[in-house]
Length: 87
Image (cartoon, rainbow, N blue to C red; front, top):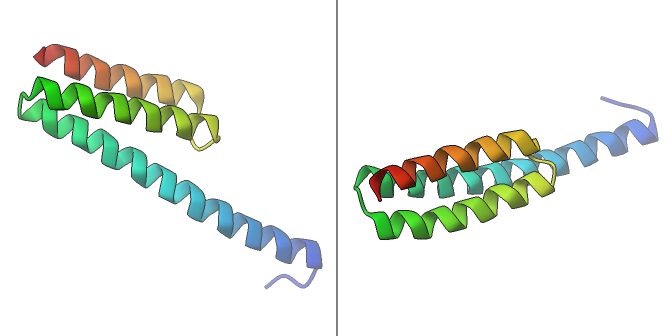
């Protein structure tokens, strides 16, 4: 365990950030799963609704630094492509 005050603070900050990032990633995964489920069921209306929510969450995660912007773009692109394939 760290003895230096700044090192102790860094450990606390890292734990806080890790918990925040984990929560955001979990939310994104849930939204992505909802889109993929709607696509698997060939429910175009539900898929489009879930897609807009998922895109919003993915972009929020990107703006907060949880995901790289190219990762966000790739995720959005793949989901949009999947939804368009059933429309």
